[in-house]
Length: 240
Image (tube, rainbow, N blue to C red; front, side, top):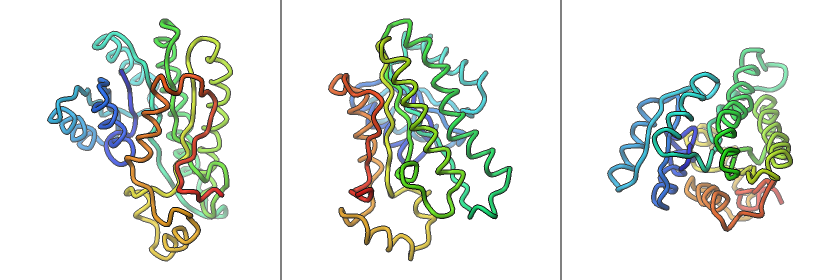
């Protein structure tokens, strides 16, 4: 039983569909109600089981209710995928307090809120997986992304704390660091910049959402039972 945030589109939707094909019941959460409903319908038409929640991950009360509903419906929660995120790009001198606060609230605090709601149910069974989306830029930095980079670097730090705290209790925590993936977020980047990025990427192309989803599925499986506190890059070699 899995809960995937940011499941209305892109990597989150691809992850939810892949988990469902692998046999998981999947709870889908996104502020985009139409998007998350569409993903749930796609899963249902393919024979899977999904529950859509048009909720905001920064609302702690709502998140507790969502997790309680999932556990009431399916008996347990095995996997949390903290995929939801936003980007508010600006050079440092143009970063507004509002953009800084919103980016950290959604990307960093939102992941904590979701994990905090899920962990008690995982602790009760001494079993669980917490998977969180960081980014290549959380490791390298990137021009014009002060807030986004800070939030994604924070995900790495939190993941390592959770790995230490929860590992002895049967719960692993890992982060996935995508590079440039063919999603709506990346498609908004100017073509000149994309060309420069591809020239520096050994794989010579952008990644596909499904390629990130594959890593989430592996980390959620028993095959990854001894991986804890890791940051797994999915970047075509761009970090090299």
